Every structure is written in structure tokens, then in C-alpha cells.
Amino acid sequence: MNDRIKLSLFFVALVVATGSIGTNGAIPSAVGIEAEFQLMKGVGANIIGVFAFGYAIGHFAIGLTADHIDRKKLLSLSLAGFSIASLIAGLAQSQDMLLVSRFVQGLFASACPIIGRSIIRNAGTFEESAKTMSSASAIFAWAPVIAPVIAGILADSIGWRTVYFALSTYGICAFLAVNRANSQWFEMPAGTRPLSKRVVELTSNSAFWCGVISAMLMFGGFFLCLALTSDLVSDNSSRVARISVLVTALSAAYAVGGGLSRVLLHRFKSEKVLLISVLFSLLVGPSILLLHAYDYVLFSGMLFFALFAGTAMPNATILAMRNDAASSSMSAAVVGGSKMLMAAIVAGFAARVDAEPSVLLATTLLAITVVALPGVFWVQRR
Image (cartoon, rainbow, N blue to C red):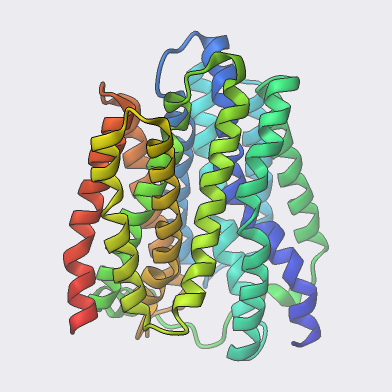
């Protein structure tokens, strides 16, 4: 591993984690927001749904332009915007102001994973970059696990606004790290192809579409589990703590799923691992639907789905990037933007549908896996 990659490892982990911390770290604030603004339902879904929508739009825009503009300036601007939007969210005096600032948070945070990963991808040989990407992933994959714990402590002991002040502080630290980083890390790849040609080559690949759709559906199901945590936990005496624990457990299961994928790949091809993940996830919806009255079945089912969503995601992403003559950064941005757009849709759906949360969760997860299955079968058999 060369010195440039070694130096960029923790920097990349710090930057890439911004989006996941901004998502999961905000969920424990839902209880305090409900109380202050006198809201009844769907707060958790709304505050992460609007973030996901901004994150999705930003992914599409950055994916089309990241190879044509100064990456260091773009990343600095993104982190500065994230910090300011987080501060505004912490000072919000109405639900509308909070939601607008959350949307802007997501919009600015979207540059972080795209540019952060591109630093490693362009830093050395393929083998060196692959090893370093795995090491960096091992660091930032646990950021959304730790973030809800810290946010829960802050929200419960001081108040929900401190969660957003902490997010603003994190963004400032990442901003300072970017501005102190070596400018060579942000060098543009040589021989960038015309945008129109890259788009045509990417969208004409059937494996790309199957990977994108699979990633959208599986991540959408995982995001729905996160979005409904504040509605599923009703014990007021320890609600913030229970929400924090549940979000942390879901995030941990998702992260463990990524490790399980690496284990399964020693024995099976990537398409087979994706198929196994979707088949096992198919069991969750009916189980919750039949036994949702039992809390342990409901929460176990959510953890089980999160585990196999985490197993499916890297393989769906790899599938989308297969034979990608267009640009790996573009295909990664489209996958990331598509899955976050789906996350925003399911979060908005959860916030507005008047149904028992457990029944809504079960039926949606069942529909998601049923829709994902034909395409996964097709890819595996072709």
C-alpha cells in the first residue's frame, strides 16, 4: 500500500461517513421534535425522508459533473453547506424550517461518498485501491451504528437541538480535514470521456438496470425499517433510549450483512449471493404480518431484513457496475442516487399512510422482495 493511500485512508472514512451519520444520527431527535412542535406521527420518517431526497438529487447531479470540476473545491463547498444546514436545523422554530434544512443537509452531503471513494480509486493500482477501500469501509460502515447512540444520549440529556449542533461540528471537522489534505489526492482521472457517450453506454447495459433496481428495493426496505422506528416504539418512559438502541441494532445488522457477503463470496458468485439475500428477505414480510402482535417477532424480522439488505447491497452495486465502460463514478452515483430516491419515497409513504406501522412494514417488505426477485433470478440464470 503506497504512502498516498495510507494517508488518505482515515480521511476518506471521515468524509464518506458524513451521509450515513446525517441519516441515522438524526432519528433519536424525533421524540423531542414531536414534543416541541406538538406533532403526532411520522416525524422519524419525515426527518430522514427529506434528507434522503436531497441526498438522491445531489448524487445524480454530482455523478454527472464530478469528473469535470475541481473535486477539492466541490467537497469543501459540500461540507460547509452541510455544516450550515445542520446549524439551521438545530435552530429551527418550525417543522417546515427543520425539514427544509434537512433537505439541504442531504443535498450537500451527497458529494462526500462519491468524491471520497474516487480518491482511493484513483490513488494507486486496482489491487491497492481494492484493499484500501475494504479497510476504509470497515471504518465508515460502523459510523451509522455509533451515531444513534451518541445522538440518543445528547437528545435525552440535553435536547434534540444538540444532535444537529453535533452534526454541524462533525461537518466542520471534515471541512478542515479537506482543506488541509494534499491537493494531489483530488486530481482528476486522465482521459475522461464525453458525458453523452458515457450516459448512453451506461444505460444500454441490462445488468446495470437489474443492479440498480435491486439496490433500490433492498435499500428502500432497510430504510423503511429505520423510518418506522419512532412510530413502532411507544414506551414514553424510555422512548429515546429504545429508538436509539433499535436504530443502532438495525445499522449493525446492515453492517454485519456486508461482512456476511464477503464470506459468501468465497463460495458463491456475486449473482448467487444476491439471489440468496433476496430469498431470505422474502420470509420477513409474511412472518411479521402473521405474528406482528409479538414485539420480538417484529423487531427480529426488522433485524433479519437489515442483515440481508446489507448482504445484497454490495452485490447489487457490483452488478450495476459490471462492464461499465462509461465511468465507475457515474454508475456508483446513479446507484447511490437511485437507492436514496427510493428511500425518500418509502419514508414519505410511511409518514403519510394511515395504517398500523407493523402491518405497513410487513406488506411493504413483502412487496419489495417479490418485485426484486424476477430480475435477480434472470441475472443468475443468464
